[in-house]
Length: 341
Image (cartoon, rainbow, N blue to C red; front, side):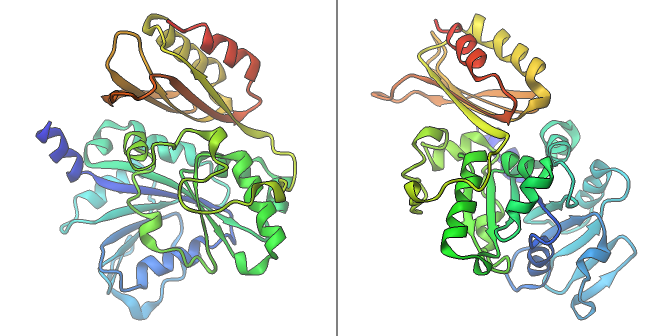
């Protein structure tokens, strides 16, 4: 395995940053481009204008790339994201990480899919996490007037609940309950003025399900998130979600699966429900297989791989979490259970 490990470490982690206008993305990007954090980040944005880069901090620029005096660079997506990333990778000097900002309304899925699917890009980079910035004050309005805000939360691996200083404790609890209802598996960080430690957002390994499961074995226990495993206390009983969300998560559990039934089922399910499935994540116990099989998907794109052997005394059970809209829970549950060995 050393060769594969070496290749993985040579891959540069990519963070996809989503969030509405006003959620604090620009503040966060400016911190990356100006703070003395000792790392070299490449930030890919849609428009320079929105960021308003401080001229005093620019060492050198051509029209496409601004080099900052803290070693970071900023560039715009010209045409195609793949070409932009390839151009970055050809630049001398290695980056510690790449951050791709999506515009306020953009669906993060196509951006994530680029890094999830494009072989060329994938050999050099790896999708590290989809991070959503959420404005605690305005989230209730955003959820009322658009599906996108909900989708961004549902899609995220890490959520930064920003502007917490602008809401009361009760409002914050309600916003957090809403975020949890949409996406129980994401890690939530609360912040004021995007003041989240960069290490909590960049290079988390949260998209890589195998890594996420190693660092948090309860990552998929959506129904057990009352005792959050990241040391935050949630005060569950107190807050109810702000409004009825249309995106929800469905957590399925069963014993060992028959691989001849499970694989055709999951292929068919993702093809059929793909547009409504934002993310799916699971650990499957396959009959006759002594390794845990980890599966994850983005819309209709599915990826699976062995993770590690089941440990002695570990319960060999299959867990699958779907996060999406208008999913038929009864049908998913019934057909999933029909795949049991």
